[in-house]
Image (tube, rainbow, N blue to C red; front, top):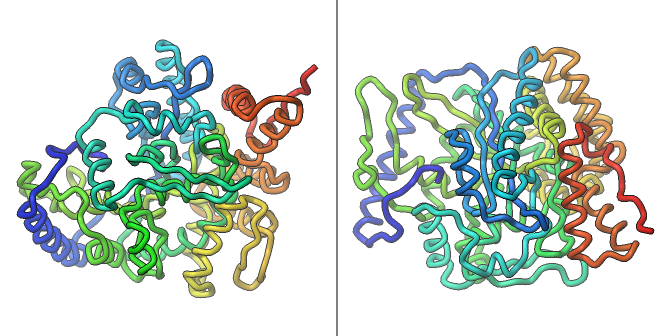
Length: 496
């Protein structure tokens, strides 16, 4: 869905033609996987989505002006007019690669913030902007320009046949709201990690990423507030699922899969995921390569597989497979999509270190982790950790029921840092990020916990919820540029 499209509505004949081409793509991809040579440099990369706020800490609808100010193709639109996205340069995890990634994130955020300041706004890297209002999401001004966003909004609602219903448990009665667009999806801003993987290792890497999804999201949770309500520690997870849910409630009751999906089984090949996408999910944007004026093959290059790639972009797996034909030699990537943006460049680099190091370590085990736990166990841990963050209790092989913060401190963070060093990272780099991660897990203070505690403190001393959310956002922005990881951020001083 990153590419622009040419239409926002499609005929029955066009949908039929797309289905036939999609099946043809799938067959071609299966045979191509068996014979092709892929780039296997093991590079890593990141995409970072950020929010824009005005002087009153409310969403600033200035993305068009900010992107024009930046005039850099690495910065692009996201679906919300108060969002911008930056694509970071690829690097390697060895040596000082993660340190360079951290420096790149810091530099790109500062450039975006300078451009935002020129238009009366600031950037905020956070899972959910705490000051987003139901009024904004119920209007028409929230969406960025572009046919693909218009089409996605229209087609999801048409497939669903009724309004989007957000129902998320939390304080009081939780959140219960109806929307006549997919606008709540724009509230979900993430940090996406990319890992280039060889075809023969992709299934193991995906299985490993799924197995650790619960502890990973607990460690990085940073989205506890949505539309004024304190909900899950990582509310992005249920909000994103429900915002893009094409199923009416009856289909959900029948077991029809949601398009934002954790999955339901371990895999043996990357092809399993693409085949599952085609078999289980109807096309949302049925634009054929002919309509897009794109060839299936170019001389001496990998097949473009337009229909298959477009379809893959409308099934939002938390760990998504990516086939990139490139310009010379194709490559395969694992796209890890479950982490929120923020808080700081140091925190985000530490989150990346945990993911890359732990996945690598798990790939080297003689008895894979995923052979010792059920897929349902991994899925349950993911939901529990999204709900409760570092306070969650989950079941883990050979340990049993354990507090996830203790599992991270005693086992997973040390294992991830060992994996990072085995990848060739400088010991000092691994030690730096290990210290950040251990500090966060030991104190129990990730971004979500800091936000919850800060708002609670402000309300205890007389602030209303809207005032507390705005002030917390101001303090959060200060923290982003403080140079300190989130677990070291102070609580607000008492009002006099």
